[in-house]
View 1 (tube, rainbow, N blue to C red):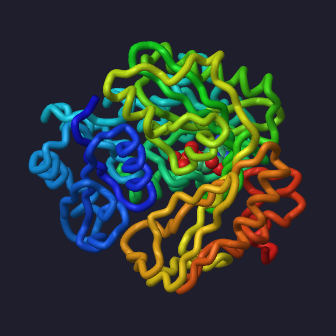
View 2 (cartoon, protein in one colour):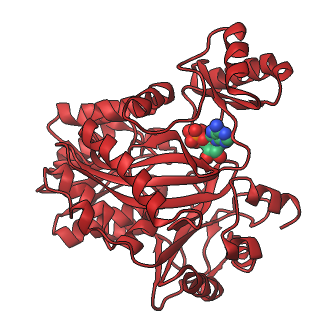
Length: 447
Ligand code: ADP
């Protein structure tokens, strides 16, 4: 096992990792920018190191400063959390060159899955169903027209280097194709410095369903079921739940086993998520995330497996927590991402939290680094915390979520709590009847 873990992150995920370290009895090191000197992860860690000024590129993305922090404190492993350096293959390699463990997948797998064209090719080869589309990048309009005719319109043009929903354009008919190609190319060039694009059939009303997997890096892997993340705004997830209201046990086991088998073949190490669009009973791979995800707690609540703790164990060469056949799913869990934003126009609302009172009681979990008197800095993402609720059934979970949302007090900044209070009372949400477009349509109609 590791002697000391440095947590290269901030906010609730830094706290989350810290909790796993404490339970394992491993000393932890927090790092922080000057803007985060008063942050909760700094207060609760065994040691802390300031790694630079507020902008992330000078602090949380500053590799030399992180290496120096490991050196000074004697940390022999780094947990990257999500975002920042979590999917940076080069960072994992640099750590290895310095004899420091990276709590995450092998660098080659991070790199492979970071290239969306390569990821899709690999997924297909491993027997994972993919969205019909071009075999790789498309270089000419002629080639694009040919593929468009084969797969049928509408067609989605996607940036190979894409992320965060940028560099995507829909061509509804052949007439739109040239325009969609050139716009997607120039957007991709501007955002990622790479204008490579590929084509996919544009699915009209899919759900976003993802499978959580965990591998030991030596050829054993399990799946921990799915999360339904269809409630999105601008391709950003807002609420997640598990199990998905759209799947039955047989479908879950089938797609889960396809993913676990692929990960065994790859000898994948650590936690990962295989993301699909799901429409009319079919799954279509879109990408794989090689890190712990924001929404991992919903899986923890229904499996009783601590994913972050298991990430640390397998990174240190340990075994998986259980065999697939011994893994059971209990009840239902829903997560709400509470952001410091205006609940209906989503303008960020940083500032001081004057009153903070998180909800409690049976089946209620709040993962947050906020506290009364804390000032949310303007430099980073706007998430204040995650409210995760568990119940024996989806109905019980919703009932509990409703009262937990009503109990939650965050004053001084605007938050998205009022949006969630509206959502849990909406009939489509109560029925589990929503696609990836539902929330935007709901908001466009004035909420
Ligand atoms: P990014 O890496 O930019 O997040 P993804 O490939 O994960 O890109 O896609 C982000 C979102 O875009 C998906 O969750 C879905 O809402 C939408 N999307 C992606 N591919 C398709 C497709 N083929 N058809 C319809 N919607 C899609």
